[in-house]
Length: 266
Image 1: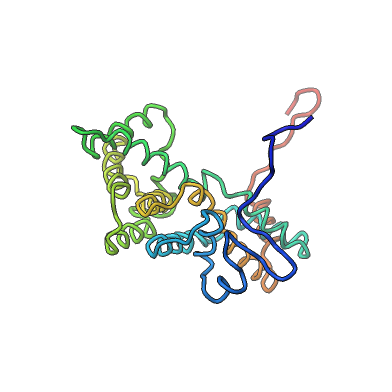
Image 2: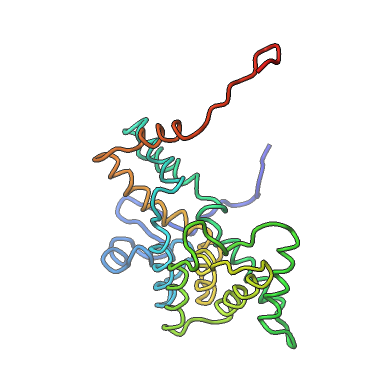
């Protein structure tokens, strides 16, 4: 039984021959190597075209902004996996990447959705501030946290988010998405009854939307960026290992409750 699309199977990403590799129509050796940065190459791979200068700048900026953030759960998972099998670098990296989700690191895609909703409801006669307030109230009613706001460490502001927004303004690329994010920050404070800092995920979504970075790239940025950080931690793990130490500290910190006996007595 055939499952999936019927017809010719095709790809336009790349092809490899004995004497050449072609990437999106460019000869790898003759046109890309020595002429293209990895950020530009990533954009080309994903979209089929070279980025504009502003797209390259902000894509590169966002990759740097979230590549590293200390001993996060994904880093700890990677280091402990590597400690268990130092020969399996790829397995340790994979363990860390699997920890890149919407709670930690991967909320930019959700933030993009919130910004899209605000801008879609900003119709003639309705300001961005009014649309942001309406969206904030709707999310508040669900009882769920709002993507892109609050951080367990960075208070009262996330310095990464502040810098991204500032650079967008300096370069003249700050547009409707950045405006929506700024207005949403005010709306969130009013709706939640306390200031919640715009975190780096919302700043990434806003600055990249204004320079027309496709949403598919925004979804992949946290994974691509954090892979670099994971490799750095695993390189350090070979020199100064702490993987088993992290595991032992977890064991030490968690209280183990005594299981009830089979007859139900404590």
